[in-house]
Length: 256
Image 1 (cartoon, rainbow, N blue to C red):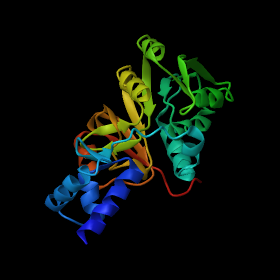
Image 2 (cartoon, rainbow, N blue to C red; image 1 turned 90 degrees about the vertical axis):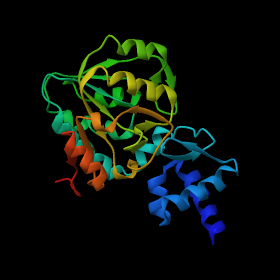
Image 3 (tube, helix red, strand yellow; image 1 turned 60 degrees about the horizontal axis):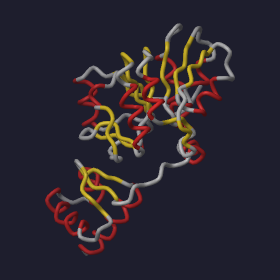
Image 4 (cartoon, rainbow, N blue to C red; image 1 turned 30 degrees about the vertical axis):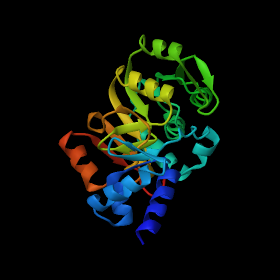
């Protein structure tokens, strides 16, 4: 019985990349103390390692290609993009990261006036070029095929000379213990650097990203200006949202 559960736990972590202890205890319906004993058994197998607040695979997962990310939860991302656009005002300068979720914001800025987009995402540059009302500041660097974006030291240095009104970012995983997390080093560094350049940081994430821990932390959840998602987060997140005056925008089930 216990051996079967440990085998299932191993596959659960390997499939997700990283998981919080709270998530595992809830998923397998066991106490934290029982879970810790099972985790110790898993560590001995060599495929799982401890991380802050949870466990992760020992392998460094490759970033999911943009073509794959764009197809996941597409309808939810479109609803999130529509709602996030309500946070953009005429004349603002905004930063868009390389995520497929943030990309869904651009079509809904068509009626805005004098908007400047700052981005290292080639996908965002291409999408923004369709709308003559949008000005684009492109951050160059080393091209990364997996994220279809530019990364590297030159990208980070360019960010030091730019100020933005609002930063729109996504995350590979979100937890209250680790905050917003990402898989790849340079993407995490870009996010970590750009949040220092904007007065407001807005998270765009569908419900599957919550209670999931990725490799690299880049921003505290409690410091967000707003969260745009497709379903209301759990009560633990709601408590933090209320106590820190974070705006919560939940996208409706259908776009009308």
